[in-house]
Amino acid sequence: MLASEPASHFWQEATAPVPGHVHLELARLCRENGHLPDAIRACARAARHGPLMAEALLETARSLRALGDRLECIAALKAALHLRPPPALELTLYFELGLVHDENDPAEAAYYYRRVVARDRRHRDVAGRLLAAIERVESRPSAR
Image 1: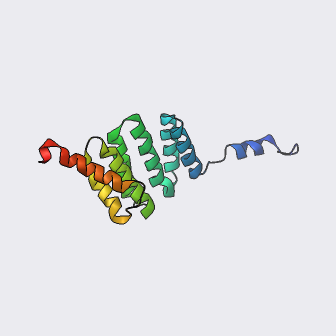
Image 2 (image 1 turned 90 degrees about the horizontal axis):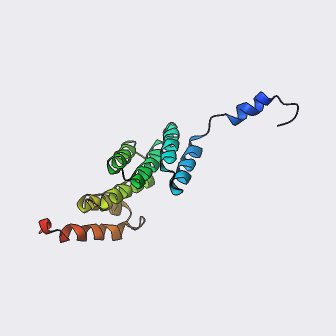
Image 3 (image 1 turned 30 degrees about the vertical axis):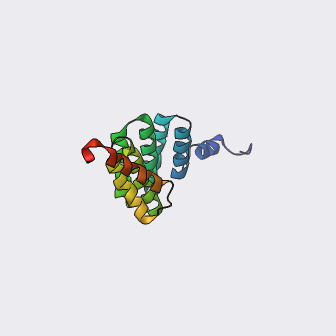
């Protein structure tokens, strides 16, 4: 700011609306540093920017999963899928659904991992996770 510029000009710049991708990046940083409620709030702000809504819901789901809120996490991931995201993001959403179900419901996890494998078997470690989920399902006493 120049000395000749009014202070209100500086204030307008400082309070200008923040682009959605900045909120999304802030959410990622908050989640990575363990500030999960702040991450969820930043995701809500990012979601106001239409094209970023699916990504914001993914970040929200990751924070909810870290908080142990499986049901809300699943709801956020499914809501993101209903937005018809780009194919790469869609694979990530299915993979994340598999991760959420992996511990408590390996059959459901296998369902989501299969959806990812059908499109890209090299996506993250999905092939190994699918095999592990299937083995857990088959080793259950009720599966025999």
